Length: 471
Image (cartoon, rainbow, N blue to C red):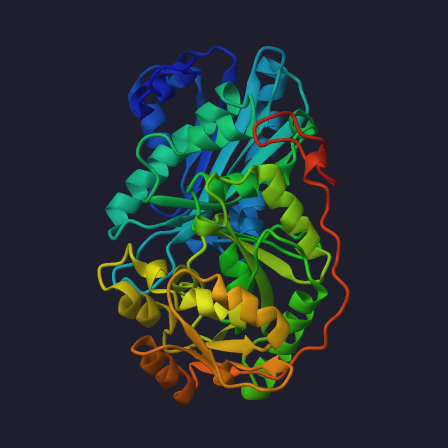
């Protein structure tokens, strides 16, 4: 624990753990070398902490140890590793030192960059541990993406993260925020992305695991996390892998039944556009942990989570992105799929997308932003608005003037445009199909938003999450 001082270095963390007479356990690592165990073996006094290290590179050896039938880089394989190593620790050492040791089993299974640079660089890491000698087991599981360009750098970053995880497990669990910030120490942001944290065991019965996902996005540890319908905890790669995707950007104003219908009709439109996709399309609402112009101050985690929960009741998952620019969401989704990606937006959202001030942070301004947004597989399904709702809201926009050609009660995307010269770019996007005007969606009654006050602030002692707790 740092007690407000500068974080300890990785070497000192490993040494402190080695010198703790109670902490004792094993390390099992597949892929990227034995980078975590190496820190403990070279820090000094390793015999005080390390019962065993193992690295099962050969597939037949790995299957013999941990069972066949699962992908080698998967949560199932990680859990099999933790289960076997934990059982072996208990079977071999509980009688001799169980009354004086807090056992742990650390494991990771990772796909680091291959020689050709063609693979997805990601992995699973976890630790099973006791809070006190002879105590019940607890568990922390992470899914990580490695962002360094070379396998040696990826292995180095993985070693730093592993030491952070073991150290934080025993010394930095005062709150969810403390735990997450501890995992990122040592210059890991930008090198390692953590897009899933899951917990189990009696020491976590008062923790709300959902707030950890919010924290990953708010603290910049992940570009985005996904809250799936039904509560299955999956990293974005497993939700999006090679699937067509429809994303409906949302805000923190209200959950409108029109929004949910719009996402549903957009999924049907994508199925009609691509009649025989290789995988079933997935529909997601998207929110931004840093909503940019929506608020001058950062939103509290309780408000974000209340909005997520309200959207989940509509029957679709929620993608919580670190930032709200749609071109950033395009880049994120395209990391995991080359299948068609569609954004489902109303006309006001479309107008905001085409604000020139929206791209002032980019070197190429709006041209660069539009080019990033409309990747080869991306289109926007633009849904109409009633003229009565649209006209006063367009007048409030600070930048461009918009012209309406519609005379009826509904305005479609091809019936309004920004004034020249931006109007020429808009006309090009309409003519080429990058922006697809959609028919009206029948309005429906709004859905109430959950009270954000029932969810404690991030880093406090939240109420228990449903289904969390002991094994």
